[in-house]
Image 1 (spheres, rainbow, N blue to C red):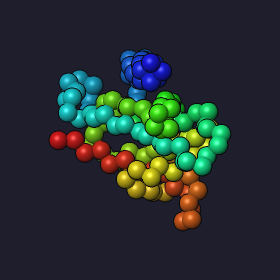
Image 2 (cartoon, helix red, strand yellow):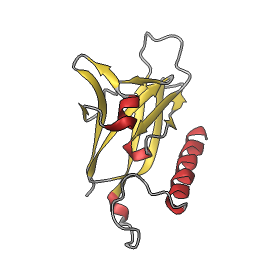
Image 3 (tube, rainbow, N blue to C red):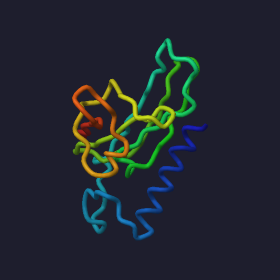
Length: 144
């Protein structure tokens, strides 16, 4: 129920920004052309709580280029000790940048497609520390 509310909130926000005259950061094609539904896909983000971690995090969120760097909350599943959310209509055929936030702190996602240097203020704000310097995670989104 909470996950559906988070997704509904994101979809409502996204539709407001597209109809309120505020252009999204990246558009796939001009507004006049109908959007091909095959260009988007569903991505499930999961963050398992480490077995030795106590107490449990209060919040886990994802923030990235596909959310215009706005936080989307993950929902905790007690049975699997995993935080998760499914995001629909993630723009396909491009590389996205993102970070997971655990209690507001950037955290590594071991299922990411790679790491890269942060570019711009949004990415710099949410960068994670690595032995090679600050990074953000990559999501390669290929659709058929």
